[in-house]
Length: 297
Ligand SMILES: [Zn+2]
Image: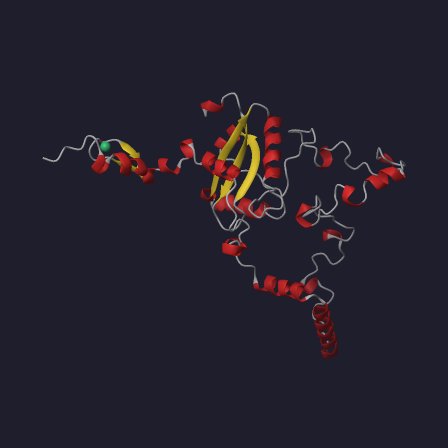
């Protein structure tokens, strides 16, 4: 796209038209990458697999719109971060985003995991080893002053992250021991044990709040589709007027080549003057209203 020649980076909006994921994803990338078919990469545990599977099986459900081009990578990241915060993407159920773009000064540099200068530096190796926080510093971080205050669930930076313990996965002595390999294979529970187990299960379920039990029963029956859960009054946007910003965004993504009226199915050839134009213009100025239509005799 020649119009973006001096602005190779951009913030984009991916719109997903299926029913397995939220509708929007805001990201930043190079325009070239998008033109080569890039639709955004999802890393959250919640959506990563569904996203990849849907991209593979139904790429036609993903539409991407360049919101704004930029000269510098970091400008794009900054605007990406701004939009993500503006639309509260992390808590909004309309967005696939589970995190906002990081503005920590490492633009474009991978500092995750082993690439981080502090990777593995614990205990004596840590630059903070042996340093005690003063009481004042501690007090500065209590209650609402703590940057993590109130950030529960999806808001928590730890959300969806795995903390493998000493006994997790392959380290667990029971790992992989299913069926014949299981130490319990072939042994039957006595009727008494069964009764006891059933009693304790009932007791446990009765001690839980009813809402919790309802949730469990719901999850056992299978959750309704996202589209069904978002229908009508359950949709977070239900009854809310569209913000000016949203309107502009819709206008933006439907402008130029993205204008739906430019699609072949909305194009009509005028039988009088022969030009091919959008249906709406045709109804207004062509067909029976065409200037080149022969006058009635
Ligand atoms: Zn005409």
